[in-house]
Length: 111
Image 1 (tube, rainbow, N blue to C red):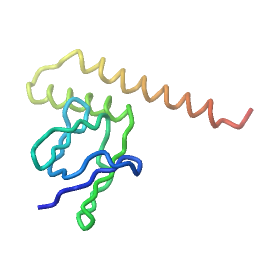
Image 2: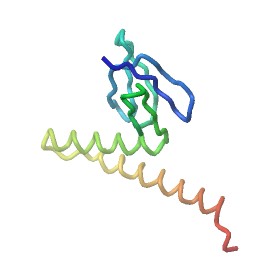
Image 3: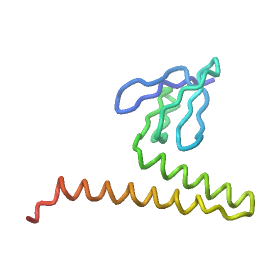
Image 4: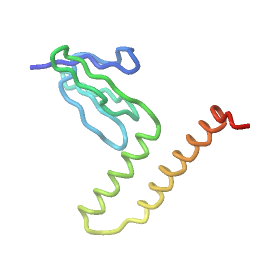
């Protein structure tokens, strides 16, 4: 059985990981004792079985997007529209707009 060391920006965040899943926009890892470790708003960017490593990509936008997708799946499963879906989508768009403005302020050299 593979037991992974998990890195986020080259920093070891967990080890002996045998299970990973998403819950409410957060990545949840479980070690060999099935103890949960919440990593936050992250995705698995790379799994290297040969070296038993897992690398993460963490960003607040990831959590918002995952919560939106979970809300979409919930609506599809129940067959009922939920107005909270629009609120969740607005949060994703708002966070994306903020990131774009921040990058524009930091890197726009046309002035």
